[in-house]
Length: 277
Image (cartoon, rainbow, N blue to C red; front, side, top):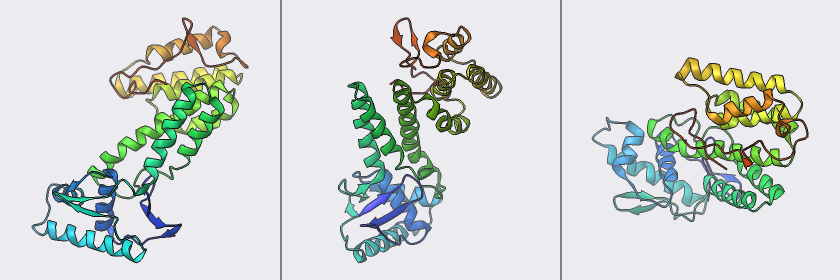
C-alpha cells in the first residue's frame, strides 16, 4: 500500500487508487499517517475529527471509520494496514509513505553535500522536492492535522534552501532566480531564502534587483514584525553594494564572511528560524 500525504491525501496499490471514503475516514487515516508506527489513542483521533466537542458516540464512530478503511484496503489486497494497539490504532512502519521517502532522500542529499558530491546532492534534493504535490494533506482543514503537517512543510523549505545553496556552488545562479522568486514571496520572513535569491541575482549581473529584494524584505520585517534583517542578510547587502568579488557574476561558491562559508544561524522568531547548511 502506498500513501501520499505531501499534497491531497491519496492511497493506492501499484498505481491503482483506493477509495478512502468520506471526510471522517480520511481525517482518521491522515492522523494515523502523521504518526506512522506510533499508536494513536482513540481520544486523539476524536479530537482530530471533532475538536474539543466530540459526541458521546465518538469511540463508536472512530471504530466505524477504521472498519471502513480496513475494508477498502482488504478489497485492494492489503488487509493488514491498520493495526489495533492499546490505546487505539497504528499504521505500521512498513507502509510506504511519500513523506518518509522524501525524508530519506533529503538525508542522503545532505550527506552527499557534506562530502562534496554536489551534483549527486543536487539530484537528491530535486528528487525529494518533486514528491510534494502541494500543501501537506491539502483539503483536510483541522487544527490537529495542520499542526502535524507543519513538520513536513518545514522540511520542504529547508530542503529547498539547501538545494539552492548547492546549486549556487554549481554555478546555477541564473536558473535559480525563477525557482526562488515564488517561494520568497510565499515565505517573506525566511531570511536564508531571501539571501539565496539576492545572491543568485547578483551573480547573474542584476545587483540592483538583488538590492530591491533586500529592501522589500526589510520593509516587510519592519512593518509586520517590528524587526530589522539579521546580520547575515545585512552583510550580504553590503557585499553587493561594495561589489564584493564573491557576489559578482561568475564568482565561485557562495558568499563568505571572514574566510568562512556564510552560515545562517537558528535563532528565535519567524524571521530567523532557519537551518544552517
